Image 1 (tube, rainbow, N blue to C red):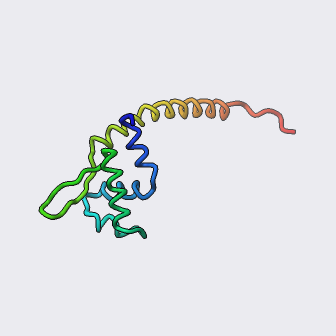
Image 2 (image 1 turned 60 degrees about the vertical axis):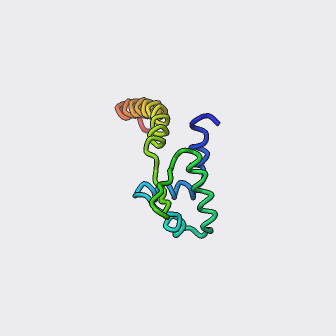
Length: 112
């Protein structure tokens, strides 16, 4: 897969997006990540594997613990790619604002 395909495929799942949102608050172990979901710990582990394979998270080894954390560089790469399209949409919205302002400035015609 090209470099951005795996991260975007991983982000397509709402459970994985929720896991990333939790990891944005700080690293966490599998048990902590599984707690808010009505799915098994092995299912959460599979989601974590997808996120890790996509390069979005990493596992830190701390004795017997294996907390997960975000990889900020991977997220920055996604933001950079999305930023190209953000500029395009901001330009389109600016043009729409200009058109709407011009319509607001038109004198009102006779009322029927």
